[in-house]
Image 1: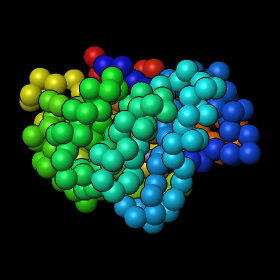
Image 2 (image 1 turned 45 degrees about the vertical axis):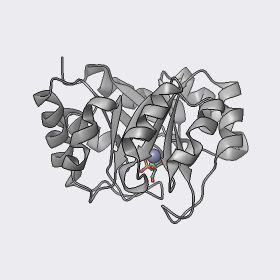
Image 3 (image 1 turned 30 degrees about the horizontal axis):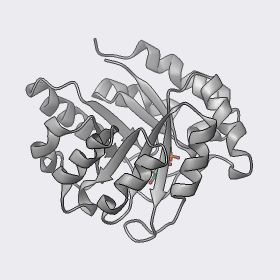
Length: 222
Ligand code: DX5
Ligand code: ZN
């Protein structure tokens, strides 16, 4: 199993976004997590297409776009044109989940589905073999810097079991409240793509990334 770190630029300093992105790249992160919020699906509003287009120009990191928006099907083509490599859509926000996931793949991107902390894993049963990645929110979506919800650990384990039973090696991404202190725990539970915002962008960015990667390189699964 491969392990990927996806620093969330929601916690970066936008006055010097390029420098912050260069730091995470230099330190060895593979992905960049890009949180789009619409003020409807979640209370806050972040950034959208124009910023992604600019970020695409200055980095070759894998752009991991997490759409926290109502009816994400409206914007798949546009985010593809702006340079997204992965698009993850919320189960709770999308009526035509299968069609939208298929569209993401048609546009040449990896397709991801995401569920909120109170949405059970089993709602994903029908789409498990149609996604490249499943994102489990380990906080309520909407803001960086929240505390990890402890019951998430069981949920990660259960999802990994569901995938194993079907012979699928699908990536499990976790997002929210991941710190150096609970990283090994979520890896052991079965996550292999790690989002971290405040834990990466507060303080020494390169050192933070290196600390995360040092734990992740050991991994836990074959
Ligand atoms: C929250 C976002 C997260 C956020 C994570 O709704 O989806 O990606 O940036 O931030 P931390 O790691 O600080 O919890
Ligand atoms: Zn996110």
